[in-house]
Length: 338
Image (cartoon, rainbow, N blue to C red; front, side):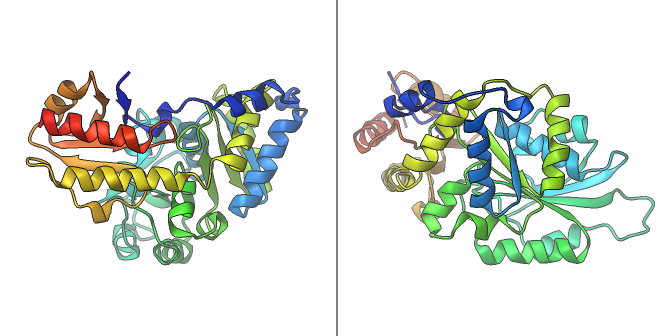
């Protein structure tokens, strides 16, 4: 089997997680009768500093339901980084499902500034422009290379949003990576947003699931869209148990993934034909440049699974199923391929 650096979504549930899932107490979650799912929602709401939460099958559904909560059909504008997931990997969902006009900003590694947000806003009363309505922050940045928004950067953006009456959304797919790498509690990042979520099927290693948190009023409305989009579930406690196990056992170990990513980046920096600054690798995502990304990925395929994300950019992501020995194997294969 090749070393799988394609994404941290490739993780397999551990034997202990499988045991927890098999033993889960379950019920009909659509009726509020699944105790394991309810417990997961309670924990995530508390973790993120919000009143309530709802369990959803995917992070993409978290984003799309949140945007539906915030965007009014008829030309409302969503402002986000050009590399953000709703723009590059959700099949046009913000437009199709929420009727959003998207306004991308050119951030640094996926992180835009409060000044950029301010400059992008359309003033009230301009009937020729879309109405600036919501802003989304991605923590950590995905295609930006796993970069971490600092609490100061987040607060500056939120201050602009509050001043202009914008709704705010935190795409926290890899929020716990930021928490472990920075030492900043999750609520310090998430509580100031109108909606926020975390994913369990990435570095936390669960097979399925994400949880969206917000006020009780917004979560009640989110349930309507969950039903509308086909996401209402039955005995979801089997899945929620895997997420609870991840919260209890897989958070602190994310530091191992970060160390492996840095080792990979440092090794790549020594290879001729590879461009990367290891200092930009803050969590578990490594993006490097080569003359032909698709060709390199093809050559590596039998030994290392990576993702070409542009003509010259390659993404490699560490996770709990990749150890330091496999990082060394990957470096040897990349050295031979380039």
